[in-house]
Image (cartoon, rainbow, N blue to C red; front, top):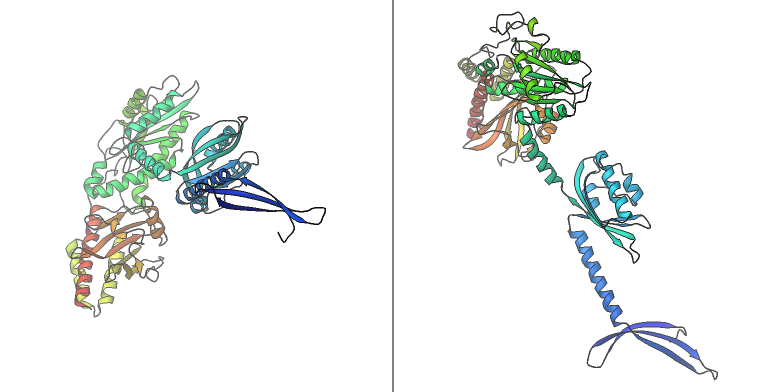
Length: 543
């Protein structure tokens, strides 16, 4: 009142009956002709307005709680101003601020290229009157990793029926998508080679055959490893499985991503090439397969050859029945080892199936049992104990043993990891490196066992063996961990004492993806067990 100007007050008064009423008091100061000041006030009952405000505030508070407590990302789009509001969960998930307008959202480079149209469909449809839409799409985080999300959007309309705002959520469905993908992969793929299995391979081929048009041409290959039983019998199934995995890698590298490559039996593969220009293309690929087989064992320092028999059948728009093509290719495949035969064209040019040593190309293709080791386990045992006995110091003796073993098997690195007393950490305590191999022992100190590529103990099977002929077949964590050490293949044996993990003995190859034979695995495991006993005895004696 002293300010001599209009003012407003909002306060509560007690009404008849004891209820509180909200009042808006508007007062103005006036002076009459005699100079007397008086005040004119207007009291307005605003109880209902205040109730609505409080209700709105409670709604906004609930909305805010939902935004901050929900794992979903909530967004609003003001269609008229083209402004986006996105809840803080976006930054938590993607680690960057989102685009602030619909135009920028449409052009967001972090949306997966295959899903850009899905974003545009939502924005265009909602702005033109669609009441509800749902899409699934992938958005990249700040590191470029894509995450699946399900977008659900609802439009709000004004009195004229025009959309003016869109409210929606982005739900995290990445884990569900990945689980579904993994289940589909398990259903469609061979567990060892990760190629299509027999049924899925056939479905894929039939899909291509059904879309053939006049003038189109394709080729089916049936590939059979020659004398594969000798591989398993001579070198063991672990070696045989490693060979099949290597074959998958070599065969897949020859063909296009659009070609169908599948494993249809123990040592049989089927490949279909759609849309080839001529039959010569198919024959050229068959030659490449033969060459790829020939070098696999040589890459792993074995003197024997590995070969295959290939049958080729040409598909056209007139001859595109799967069963006929398969039968023709299979029949052609049986016409000779270490060669390829095209059904109906080269069958008479290739000798019929004979014994493995009958023809020049198949001679030596069978892998006979042989001692790749060169030394029997008893001699190794004697050598190991003699070395320990003759050496004056424990450390120098153990280092010499690793030296002898490493050179005997021509590995890149032989080493020992020991765990700390509490079992929480491991240390690389002994290491031998071949020529040109960088030592790792200075870098591998006090490594947390649970952060060593996950719980490292889980890599060992029930027999205490961790065997990985190709690091690319391991988890991403292991690839990062072991790849940093230059490892391509590894064989490790756990050290245990009274059932407790105490470390491991390992042998790495940093030059090739080594295919260990069963004899070699048995020998190295035998040596590792002996070293484990020595290590445990030393720990027990407190030396």
